[in-house]
Every structure is written in C-alpha cells, then in structure tokens.
Length: 498
Length: 67
Image 1 (spheres, rainbow over the protein chains, first blue to last red):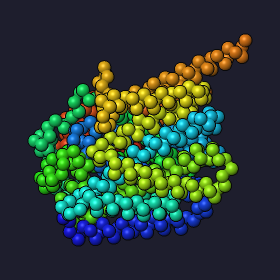
Image 2 (cartoon, helix red, strand yellow):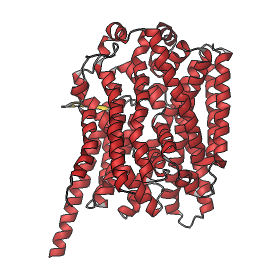
Image 3 (tube, one colour):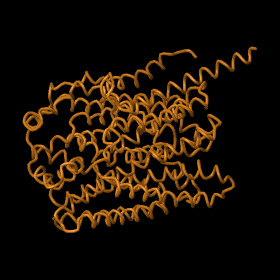
Image 4 (cartoon, rainbow over the protein chains, first blue to last red):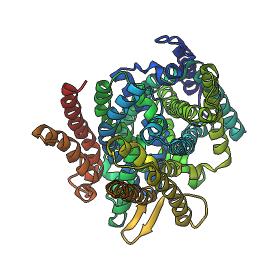
C-alpha cells in the first residue's frame, strides 16, 4: 500500500497535465476546423518543439517498460534498442527532410498522400493507409501496458486492485480522448513537453539514486547475472537484424511521419533529428535497470510478490517505488504514466488522418472539410478505445512483443515510401505485390516461429541463426519490388523500340 | 551528376556511425569496463553521443547549402 506522499504529487501533476492538454487549443491559435491545423499544429513547430514531439513519439512505454522488461528476462539481446536508436536517425536524416519538402509543396498530410501521387495508384495508397493503421494498434497497446504497470505497482496490496486499475485506465483514456478531440496535435505537443520534463527528472533521479543502492556495477554482473556481461555469439544475427529492422521501421510509422510534417522547416527538422540520439542515452540507462535491479534487494523482494511472467514490465516502476523518497516516486511514476499516454494520443491522431483522408475520403470524395475534420476527431477517439479493448483482452505478458509485431507490418511500406522518394524506376504493380507478399510472409513466419501459438517471439531460426522476421519479409518485398520494376521497364523500352 | 568531395564527406558522416552501430562483434566484449559496467553496455551508450555529433555536422553542412 502506498502513502499519501506519493499520491499527492502523482494526482496534482496529472491535473496539470489535463490542464495543458485542454489549454493546447488556445496555444498558437489556428482554425482547428482545418485538418492541417488540428493534426499538424499548423506545420509551424520549431527545432525544440519538434525535438520534444518526436522525442515523445519515440521514447515511450517501449523505453520504460518493454526494453527493461526484455533485458530483465532475456538478457543483453534487448539492448539492441540502443544502437537501433543511433541508426534510426541516420535513416531519418536521409529520408525525412526530402519527404517534408515534397509534402509541404503538395500539401500532403500523410505518407499515403505522397504514395498516391508518386505511383499514381489509389490501391497502393489505400494499402499503405491500412497497414499504417493496423501496425499502430499494437504500439498503442504497448503504451497502455506501460500505464498498467505503473498502476499495478501503485495499487499493490490493495483490495480490488484489478478493478481499480481498469477504472483508472478508462478515466485516463476518456480525458485523453477529450483533449485530443478539442486540441489536436497542439494539446499533444504541450503535454509532450511536460511529459519530457518529468521523464528527464525521472532518468536523472534513477541515475543518481539506483547506483547509491548498488555501489559497484561490477558486483551485479559478477555475482547476480554473469551471463549478462556480453551477448552470446549465437544471438549476434538476432541482435543485428533487430537493430536493422527496427531502425528502418520507426520513421515509417504514421505517428513519426506526422511529427516530421509538423516541423516548421526542413532545416529545423534536420537539426532536431541530429540531436535526437542524445535522448537515447536516457533509454540506455532505463534499459540497464533491467540488469541492475538484480542487485537491489528491496525491489527484488517487491517483485517476487508478482507472478514471474509479469515481473519484467514492473521493473522500472518497482525500482522507483523502492529506492526513491515518496514525493519523487510520485513524480517519476506519473512521468512513466503520461509517457504512455502522450504517445498514444499522437498515434491515434495519425491513425485517424489515414482513415479519413486516405480511405473514407476516397470512397466519399465530396465530403465537406467540416465533416472531414469531424470524422478525423471522432475516429482518433475511437482508435484509443480499440487499443484499450485489445489490452483488456490480450494478456500483458505478450504485449511486450507487440512493438516488434507492428514493426514487421510497417516496414513493408519501405519500398513505396523511402525508395519512392529517390528511385524513379520503381513501378506500382511490383511494389503492391511486394507489400502484400511482405505482410503475409511476415505473418506466416510469426505464426510458424511461435508454433501457431501466442506471438511471444519475433525471431525465426535460420541457417544464419535467429533473425528478426521483419528483415526477412522486407528482403522478399524489396526483391519483388525491384526485380518486378526492372522487368516492366525493360519490356516498355523494347515495346517502344519495336 | 558529378560526385564532389562534399558529397563524399556527407555520405561518410552518415555511413561511419551507422557501420559502427551495426558492427556487433566490435563492441560485444566485456572489457575495458567503466565503473564495473561491461564494455558492451557503456560503449553503445557513449556511441549515441558520438552519433549525434556526426549527425549535427551533417545537418549543418546540408543546411548551409539547402533552404
């Protein structure tokens, strides 16, 4: 049972969070009945705000819950998240300013808008919208799992913990849906800055306080977990493909593109992207908590009160609760809680844009701007509750692999979006076939790798060792897209000649 | 298109940090450690800061030429 000194800062900071969410409506005033005003905050966020907004997109419950949990349970393999962050911004620096420039010129709001014009294909654009919407759902679900972890730790030892937790989550989501509806990306950006301040307080507090409870790091690795010192050679292929696949997937997610397009200029976008790896240092420190916790007896003792399968996701909240003074624990726990809530809002905004612009509007082209914005707002609320339902149904233990599942799907739009920007010879038919083959082979491999049971692993054993399925499916997809386009181009040239 | 020294420098600023990120055997070792933290962990963390330096030079070079 936790004390009032934790509850007071937690609740009062959450009230400030709610206020900022609604206040966003009046911040940098714009006509919020206009989609690009509501969804892209009028496209005028500068270097710092883009840094915070994309930072909020990227450093989420994935950082605080999924990565430490993976390291806690499986060891150094999950530290791949650190080089992945380093690599993903290289990918972003090469592709995103170009995408930004084209989208600004043509008034595009989503990656699907770009693909529709580039390939002159409605089919491809709709497929990409659907892939984006579906791939985003498990990512939102992961955010909710992170929020659940905070509540579970806070409610430990109370009666009716489960019911209270579900009601609390539902209330948080109703509030989130309400302020996203009224404030759009402006609300999300303001709350993102607030969230990031809390999170950096948390990270710094963890850096200072946890080592004080441990003394020497060497002790942990020598005594508690000697197998965690380095990655076993058999896992190197898995590590490499996880870095590669995740780094290329990240900037294909609709919420990442949405964040990019809200930048004021390509120059500011470049500068803030270049600075974003620094944010990954916080991620690396959180990831280390998955190992260091083994040397904190109070936290291990607390964790032993939970079923083994759910201990991983509770690592960081438990460490906070058991090592920090009460008021600071309250601040840090709220940081992690809203660290799931803010990204969930941005992701749902991005999904709603895709649904309205690239699917519904194609069916009903005569839709008025007024109903377009209304449908976007309503569907952004609806998507949040779909993800919430998902979490209540799927056991949390599996939710950790959710982000990797989403990655397998979203990376399949890479040929159309990234190569579509640079390679003029790509044709729509092979890109469509490649996308479909990539998605279905990816789903099949996931099923096969898990013996058609619950999806807990996203690695497939091969002659090269275990590989991240996203990369295998992407290789198939790229081969089809490029070989197919080459064949079509050659036939066209020979037809012209004859 | 003529390949200029400028383009080579820009490409290297992206490629060098990325190759290091993907060279798992390079950093998959236990020592030298930092306050007891194995090389594997601290090197990758410090490398993030180095990546940022490379990327900042890249972005400032591009920004000087392009709008």
